Image (cartoon, rainbow, N blue to C red; front, side, top):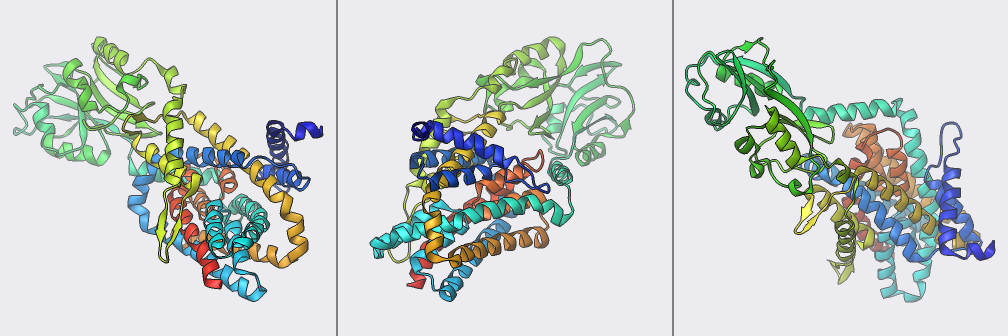
Length: 538
């Protein structure tokens, strides 16, 4: 057995299997979840079984990369609307933790290099530890190991505390996670109101004799006119269709936009607008052919070439009115209207390859990870001649956010199925926890014996003050959704197991989006605060 435990592959997956089993045990409704892997790894590390450092880095990079891809499509829009709140929370919570660390170091008599490590461990930020080690090595090269000791002592409590806080949050707030998920979904839906169909009489003489293209060019209402009834016959609307007074048109759009069209055209009509002959019908098409990914509707010219109109687009469970500059993404669902034979031709161009949506191209996936490694090594200058780096995790996260938002950078066209992102996220987290746990386990007992409880106490206080302050500000001051706030709090703590616990509360991406919103600010702030703690205490 000892020979097997010395084999990294067996040790890694043995720890993951045992840890996930331990994490599934519930006591009074609370479980460790993925953090169970860390504690099994801690025990194995105590008995001198250790995984290579590269394994830990691989897990961290996979985890943050998958989280970035998941949250990227919504991150930029949220940042534009609530950017000040993210910066405030990220800076204030991490700065408060740094201030508490400075005070405790003075009161408890902790060394400057130990305090810097405690701060990095108490806020579970490995890049901050790397920045602190670089600074300590420059001034006190023989004492750099003490910084790692402080990190290893504070890290375990921070991992567990944040996971438990997340799982206890619904009880403290008397809110069911499912209800919070539904509220979040409703809030997102308000940004993209559900579309409706409505028929109108053309009563305005100023609209008579004008083509639909001419009416659309007025930009009076953000709607799509899809069918026209003229002389008792229903036909699909084309750009060159000329409207006459007395015609009836069917339009699709948000309720307030349809009200604008009513003002322009005339009264609402109750006449049915569905062609009983079947010449004009509608069809939902899933965008699944790689040849149309990232092209705009205007480039495809579906209306001009086939007489087929796209009346609505469904993406990530959100429904909105399409425009010509809309870029098609894999998995988009298009509601189309037109002659049946033309609908079949359009479907052959856009879809009928749904199996392709389950495939992940490893070329852009791997290239994005490689690019993240490069970004993480770019030095960021600080006053006093110091330099910091985001590290592998920070670089991979920022690149994933950008790829997730843009979908493409130059020749890289990023599409990763949801199942693949979830698998990479969960596997990466488990690998990271296994590696970090075995690394900390070897030093944990000797550290506690040498420094007593004051080291653990300092780390616990910094963890609790930072996390609880962030929660109070987000949930009480800014009134954020519970799931969104839980994810953002985990970002303030740069705590992957906490995010795993938050995403496990309910079927929603609210926690992942909250995490991605605050994470960049918190990460960069900690990379700066950790070396400054050492410098200020010297």
